[in-house]
Length: 97
Image (cartoon, rainbow, N blue to C red; front, side, top):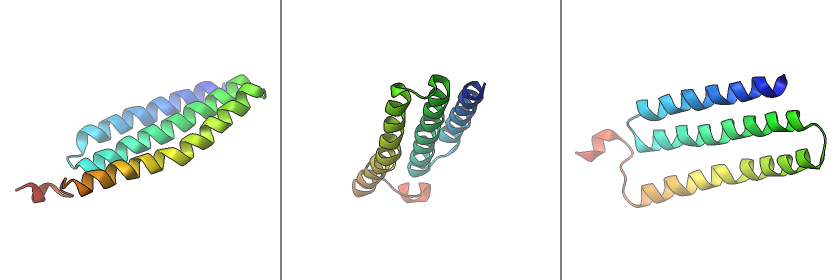
């Protein structure tokens, strides 16, 4: 039951994040929204899978994947944003004139 609720919650995160991606006009705001979708929804799905599988070797593997995702997702999004900034993508829409 808890796993199903968490899966529905992850879909809600994904839907609201997709709305945010289409609403924002700035590339950096879109990047922030997409990173939140990626991180929060995946963490919620992994926690749902941990509850669904119970305590086993599979849940320990899922916890290791969860730790890996929590470490690598912010780093990868920072690298993408930094490379966009260094390549001259403007911070605001007004800078494009």
